[in-house]
Length: 114
Length: 109
Image (cartoon, chains in turn purple, blue):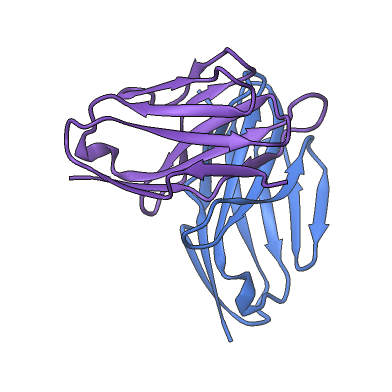
């Protein structure tokens, strides 16, 4: 049981390049989330999904797109990277249901855009 | 809009010196309030979930409490290994969580 995994762990992009971050969970969780964390700050929600095939915008969605084609995977895409997207990206999943709202986090992806 | 404010931003304690961290929140329809611990370079690790005012939970030297407007994380006789950033979050009925900026705790031996 690997929990939540993220690929890649580190990435350097040039302005204007595109990339996709992959999040995978093996706990059969319904909910999945993408956050970004900037130095000295908490987590800000980018997009989330309440089930396979669904996505919704979070607090800071601009410049990002997501897809949840399979229940276990949640993809975060940057179509045209900007220096302001330099951050650490965390994926999380949650079972949901009655009184089960604990989120499990992946180890993070450190992205630098030059 | 849901909001979470944590204080203080940073807290330095001597080993054995007890203290509390504060989390003030506003949320439309509280499903749960969460406390996480985050070590440098790692993802947040779940500590507690509190669901209703008056609820308390304990784990080793940590105790979390909840009122209708705030939550406290009490640390009793801390040790250096308790040094970390502690994050508070609330989840409303929309299924998304809002996090505070965290309190960075340093415990000196």
